[in-house]
Amino acid sequence: MKQWGLILGIARTHLHTKMKSTVTASLGVTFGIGAYITLVSFMTGLNGMLDSLVLNQTPHIHLYNELEPSDVQPIERSPAFSDDLLRIRSVRPKTGQLKIHNALPILDYLRHDPRVLGATPQLLANIFYLSGSLDLGGQLIGVDIMEEARLSNMADYIVEGSPEDLRNTENGILLGIGLAEKLSLAVGDRVQVATAEGGVFPLKIVGLYQSGLAEIDNARSFAQINTVQRILGKPQNYLTDINIKLHDIGLAVPMARELESQFRLRARDIQEANAQFETGTSIRNLITYAVSVTLLIVAGFGIYNILNMLIYEKMNDIAILKATGFSGNDVRDIFMSQAMLIGLMGGLLGLLIGLGLSHLIDSLPFDTEALPTISTFPVNHNPVYYLIGIAFALLSTFIAGYLPAMRARKIDPVRIIRGN
Image (cartoon, rainbow, N blue to C red):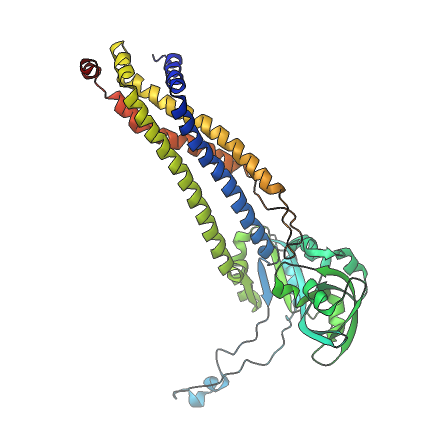
């Protein structure tokens, strides 16, 4: 039976007698783990912030009525031309309305679907914002503001005012902050909106909305659905869009295809709407993990070189251990213990350094007009990263110490003693 206390004692003695090499190897692991924790925490936090910036404002499924050319043209339906070669040019979209037919029954059906967390109606109106001599084109979106705040964290992007202010104000508007700056307007002022038909309606600004995306903030504003319906002169069942949030985002793609077939509407799922953004996120994550693993591998090579040198310096000690009754496996375990002790000490210190640097970055001010809800740099303090860090530290030191330890196991003590 092995005397692990004796083996560990010899390993500690070797490490103490070569303190400079021990510290160098431990620091390699320390900085590798510390850099890994800091980098992966910051980059995943940054990716999470960018994801939420886009995905919080994107429904899992977007239902709308898309105007497009008919697949089958009238002349192709005529039996008189069934045997002819037909070439139809300059096909125009069929006439129709952007409204969703039977929108209220569809909305009620979706809200009773167990897969659906919530479904919110919207009414999109293309308008002009008027202030003095300025007129800017944009969009006014009619929403159920309290449901939008519940399902899409819309309240986080209201920099002045609140969702309740819009709900409680007759003819109120949440004006995009880019529009407010261009029109020199503030909360409490009135802005006039004009429709394509020429009607002009005054609305009171009850809040300012800032999404962080300039193309949205410079053109988009929000009002209650009934307000936009009055502006357009439409009935209460007139809706152009339905946004759906699901309990499980993984169901978005198949459910979108199901709803398209069931209601004959265009259903755009979140993956289709953000395909390019998701590709960018995947590439950033890949780069983050690649750099982090490279740092840990470099630390492992440092341990391998130091243990190799230590074995050369400890040839006489190895010969004496074997001559006094220690087996080759015992010698291997001594050097493996040294490697694991270096990995454990360096890994734990690296975790502390990574934790400290992550909290330091998390406390640094991050002020930008594009992201009003973010006050400090985003950092993801996920404990899984710390478990991965210490596990990789032990694994890398185990691999780095295994080959030198096997070399020490095979040393012939007779040849070493005879040479001396």
